[in-house]
Image 1 (cartoon, rainbow, N blue to C red):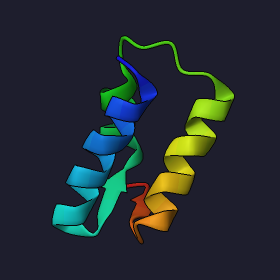
Image 2 (cartoon, rainbow, N blue to C red):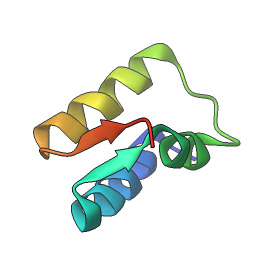
Image 3 (cartoon, helix red, strand yellow):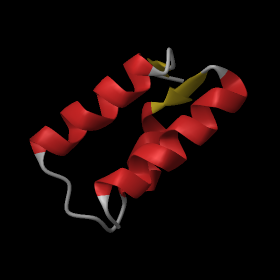
Image 4 (cartoon, one colour):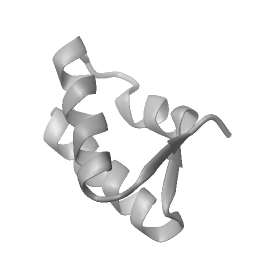
Length: 56
């Protein structure tokens, strides 16, 4: 799965609740090769959308 698809899905989840958990984000990334710069892109996109990344 491309990182842009992961970002879109993460934002969709986060927009419904206002946050996304690390477990949800890990599930979205499962089966994909995710590089450190990809994680930075996801975190920045979530921040830009005012979506918090939560433990649980």
